[in-house]
Length: 196
Image 1: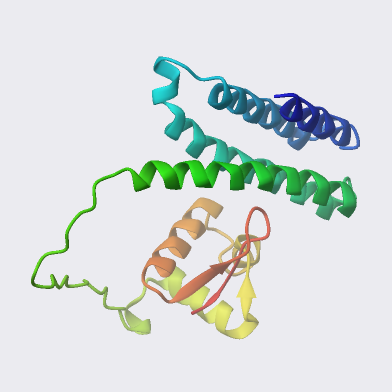
Image 2: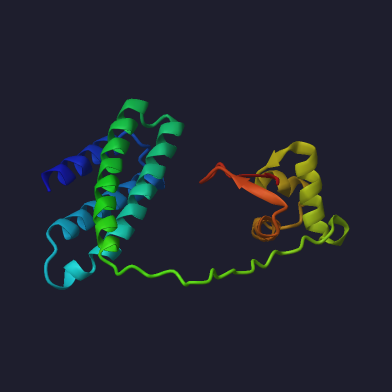
């Protein structure tokens, strides 16, 4: 447990270099505390709480991914140097890797399911892409823009669709993603779309 406290204290120390008004600083502090609380719950669980371990481990794994994302953003903003980022990221990755063997052990205790004698073939329903001329006008403009520029963010697409809200553009992008016409690259505020 002392390791968890030391890690949380280290995170708090590096968060002091974040701009005071930035909401990321407060979110990262909250997430570090949540991670420490869940680690304590897992290591000292007994009674009813021990039955919740698998759920807590799954949530803990997600929380670690989130805080690593926050710290990565801070590193790209120049608030956190690479060495500190790597040290903290390695510690969180060790915690995640320690969780996996426990999860594997739990799944190994499940009874084996025998495969049926005859193979079962499932049909995969493929969505047929509507031809380009059958796409809604907004989606056609998005495809045209991506064809000319290679990739784009939502704010780039607002220049082509000035009277359309970001929410509507994202909805159109989701439909184009679902139909397989475009792909999404990156994460957080660095999301780009390009033709598939």
